[in-house]
Length: 404
Image 1 (cartoon, one colour):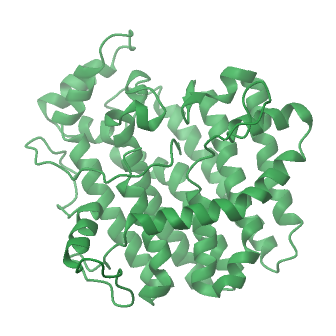
Image 2 (image 1 turned 30 degrees about the vertical axis):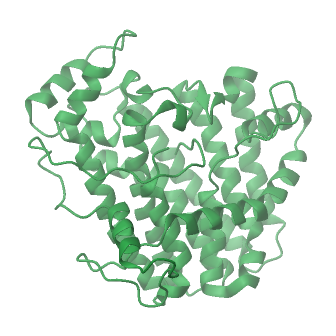
């Protein structure tokens, strides 16, 4: 569930390996590669195609360009930021200061900052889903729901940073390292309360249903986080791929699915379409988490804003790590031996190489591609018109194109 910076570049495609985990899915062309190929097929200066998107061998429609997603994200941030700032400014002084620092609006001393409040993927999903099914008016009326989802997301970030003892987020110290763990936890609690208040005070006819759905999602998020922390106490060979995939869906996929579903609710969509949007978001969320875990091991700290290999140092059972451990290769045994002992502050390169040689990186990238294909199938159920679905498709592809 971790965000870092707003930059987005194409994630390298998987490389061949002879040490793939036995549970790896069939090879699929990565979304980023398909997007580049589509760009090459367009004549120079021609607009992107709408309507009938190019079919892929897996039956999914072809993804749209990253720049379109960035425009959608910027628009969502512009629409949602006033509601976020108004909600945060209603907090008591101490919690307001922590929250404003966490969002990047203030420095630690309380002076204004032009900081980075994150990519705004979740509120963008709410607004884009609402617009796809209900037009511009539905998008405008969904701003409180989009702000509520973003408040819940940041509640989880504040708590996760304390539990994981992460010291850096978005290129600066995490809130708990500046204000203390207790104040960071309480500020996170307050953000969750603000999210529910936004929906409770919203006169939209779907607000009560949206609030119920969001609270159920928060329970699922907490369950996923509990399972994640419990996994840290288990041995490296005691965690299965099915377990860690279910945990990732609860921690990351659930909120992206909820965001899409809330957009559908605010557009007055049918129940079946709302559920398909939720499934779309969940699958895209798993793709997001898979790439996030890859970046957590192989990403550039100057781009991610987080220390390199932090998850490996904490011996976390991330998706690439568990896939590597399950591969049955000599590199898997080497990795298990490294994970059996606490990190002593030494060189992490042997651990990084063991994950890669055991096929963890390739498996994660291929699995992300598979999840994207499933996401596109669910999206076509909810929004059969490719032109109307274009914005959501662009956002889904964005999550697997990033390198930070």
